[in-house]
Image 1 (cartoon, rainbow, N blue to C red):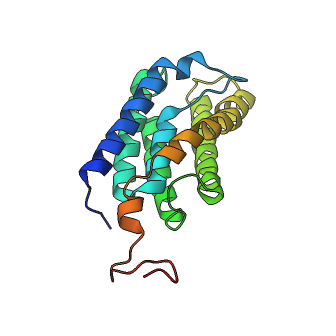
Image 2 (image 1 turned 30 degrees about the horizontal axis):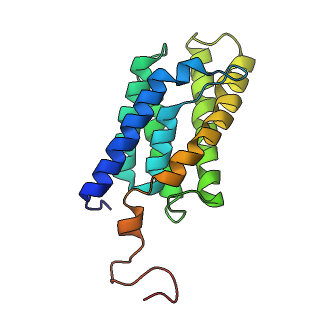
Length: 181
């Protein structure tokens, strides 16, 4: 179900996208821990998927993945596909988790980051961009997912999306939470 955007929600999403794009180009290539790198486009897709409806999450994830593909030395379309499918699954699986930083949203995001990073690493190995299965699973998979999940914490704390304005009330006008009317 698509929700109506408010100007504040659109501005918030645009600012998140701009910050993530600048950090992806300027900072992500400079930082490597055990071969793993921060993927700010994965952060953008995951945070939006936790906060928005599935349609907006998939569209954002597609363009975030395309931006990643065009700014990195990887096959074009791979990250776009992985983020689109991952964001769709995350948006539907975490429907009740809400946005913001909570243990449940952090668990959903971490599983999303690990799955996308592992599949990306294996796909890069199959396509010949990655040398070995160990590098594909450890560097591109596990290490990148851990680093990306840690760096995602401030983004999850700051971005609320349309969840705060639309998802907290039912279609009958009352709150979904018991005792609040």
